[in-house]
Image (cartoon, rainbow, N blue to C red; front, side, top):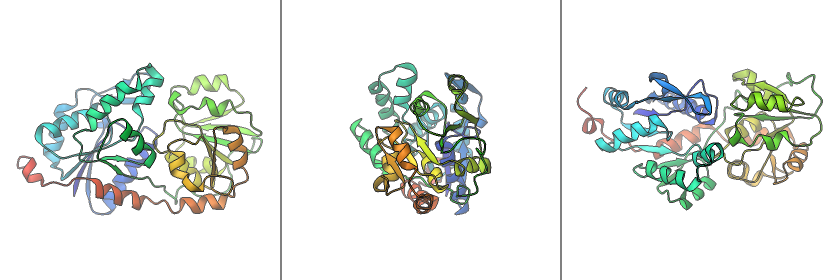
Length: 345
């Protein structure tokens, strides 16, 4: 098929949404599908308020229409509820083009954390955005349950995978000068990630933060005892994972937590709060006899996770492939006859 994917999140951003879509594109093309990504790269953009690393498209409607009519897709997927997503949705609704959407990010909770906007207001916007979608794809049962509570419907599962070739156990080449054990956080350094809960923990050894974001400079100054490594990519990122002892995931608002799978694939046990995301990823494998410890006492979880064998974590991650994720995506999209929806090329 010719598949059009619209996303306001794309490289050089570093986050779970981008990594998911990059892998999706590669896997779809490997299966013979033709994929067009409509991302901020092809549009005039402005920085996102409070998060300048994210660029938002300005008045993208005309170019969205041109791309649709030029590419003449046979399936349309809208990944984000931002300017490009809204413009693509508007085009599809007006022209009667079927499309699917995804709920990758808890925007209502993020908007509340940043601007104080009531969550109920934002979820009303989410309901409106997703209402015409043929299917709203979500990664976990917990998020499906939550969205159902907020009035969203037609929800289907689209799980995530992990690149077990890149993220794998390897020699500990990083942190040689830091006291052990090393407790690692990887992700955006932003208020919605609840990173303060990690930085405030009284733990032995060392705490390391890999990632960048609007709070990076402020937190690095406030916590000189913590090693801030900035954003890392590829083999360098994988080496940072594999060189730590426990992965700490303090977020309370993530819909999945792709970094959790990357850590497990690298042989790292996980400590996290018992919330959507970690509960769904680790599931019945939580606890000292599993691959991670989930507890409201994050310090206790971090210390207990030290006793979990690394090989057990790796074996768990090896069962979570991207192939399953792509199978689900293809089962969820709504193919249509492009000749019936678009003018002749």
